[in-house]
Length: 252
Image (cartoon, rainbow, N blue to C red; front, side, top):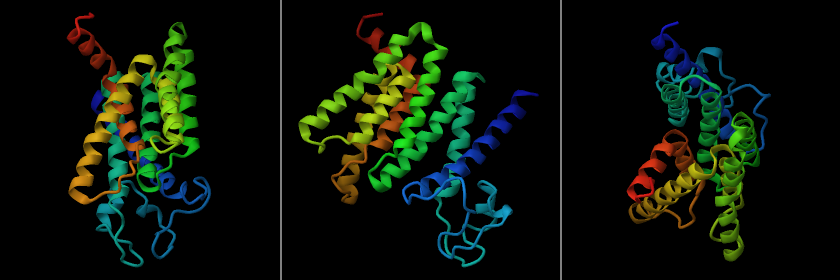
């Protein structure tokens, strides 16, 4: 199998998983099963046919409208599918096809779900954090010679967030954010989770303050999307960022 064909396969697989992510994003906050129940139009509740479930293509074919009631279909559906597919291609291109890259892809998908649910509900589902922690345990055993890096990663940022939570009595940080950084720290390790927290905090401050200024957004900050972006960036480029920082400080 040539590289190009393999990457097309990775892209298509990512699109299919992206379609399932949309199910999770809509159903988890509503306490609905993500396993049982046919996919349906959220406006007219009509059960969708198989060709209406083809990732991205069905949205384009239907012109972004439900075939039954004619209501607009959220652009989120094809965007999540496409973004997830492209992320899979990027991860495999950057890291090669290995166990780590498979875990990276799975983690990236969970981060998409976390970001969109937290942006809408200001809550991070516990199950998503548990999944990332499970991937972290898998990486811990894969790189057991450096177990202390992953163990330290699980507590260094989450411990600081927990302290902030206690000091502010929950006004400065959410419990879901603490659990996310504990799980992601176990997944990434000590150095990379520090990078993730730094990037996420900067993105959160800059983007949210800008949105408040331009759009009058609420002062309450859904931190999950920004932390997820930081985790994803650190996952792919964290080692390079750490090397650059150490060289910049004259420590390497």
